[in-house]
Length: 193
Image (cartoon, rainbow, N blue to C red):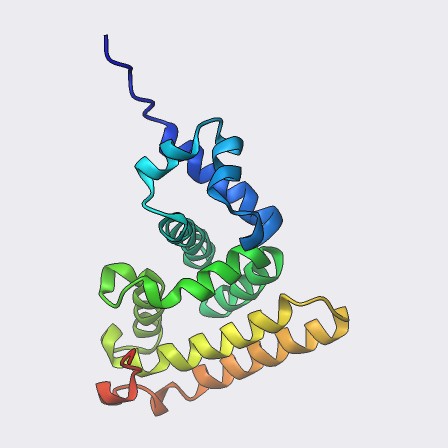
């Protein structure tokens, strides 16, 4: 009789990898450690994930989805900004993996749900179509990613508060002057090259 496949195995592997990444970051994520943590073998992991990089990408997508869930449940764009910064500070290893995997997610709309959400929120608030605000996406991403990266480091809580508040004030100025960005030609949006 052939063995019965374990339908929950991939989820166990991902949860084990997630625990290791959360506590130890990149250095803790070895396929052998994941196998041990998941209660399986390294060859079994290779059957589900081609290599460590494909496992890391699956984790990055999972962490990105967790960040997006935080943002999408916000009651305002301003609250979403605060949640973004808090996520990075509270989950530095996860945020770091999302940040370093950003270019691997792809450029189609389905692979960039945060972008689609932000543009639709801007259109709902200020009028027009979501793509009218495409030129705002990367400047806002760079603003928040820069602040989030600084907040992930150890340091004086007062300095962290200054960084957070400065980022949010700058975001408020972006929103006050949204007309500067609205409808700019697509050439103003980063092409990824």
